[in-house]
Length: 308
Ligand code: AGV
Ligand code: CA
Image (spheres, rainbow, N blue to C red):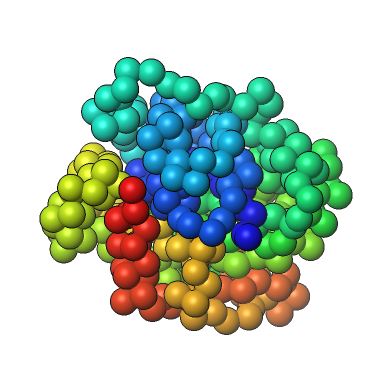
């Protein structure tokens, strides 16, 4: 059975990724950490605790670890606010109590602890910045031997980014921009990395068709949460929305969804291009997801959300 540790940063597609991991059969979730990057960390921890109470179909023993990592480049607060709204959704508050616990250690130390105590190698799924993993590697580099592979939503290798601020040149993806040094630390490790960047995830827009599909099946609680959750965010031309993290999670669960290419890449850590990932023959080996089988992707998402 696939052993998974999930670390995310509290935006809506991070939460829906967590929902899919809770609903998936045939895996074991070893732990969950959340970092205050594209969300605020307090509501993010709370929402994950409530989601675990409500949707943990396998009954795994899960605690939610709160990160104390800090940004190099902060996300816009308008985007981060969705974490508060998500945490107030009625379906997560119906019972009036929260049973799932917060982990005793901060997220990077929880990661070390859970990896060290795992009897088998663990698949890491990360849908936010790489900071908690980078900090864990600095303290305990030996954990690399316990990491089977890392699926990371971040970066892009086709030269385009999604950061449009005065402090960036637009060539970088946000998760990498939040902490470029962390990307370098992880790239300098020997961990096997599958990168789901903008080239593949931007083929899956959060469009009205998908929203209507979620709505039509809201009689299933997980579809309802996904539809309600996504209603908190809207796509605008200057800040388009995609199923970035959900694709990453689905590729980790069902690798057959992804078409991949073996590449070598580096990351820029200084200046206006900080956070930019790019192909370089002296770079570190990466498995890049170039394309997703959309039919299979949506079929599997449906299967998971229908479980109750
Ligand atoms: O760059 C994509 C990452 C994903 O992990 N996040 C959103 C996903 O959780 C940052 C992001 C880019 N554009 C955004 C983002 C937007 N318009 N709104 C919110 N977050
Ligand atoms: Ca994210």
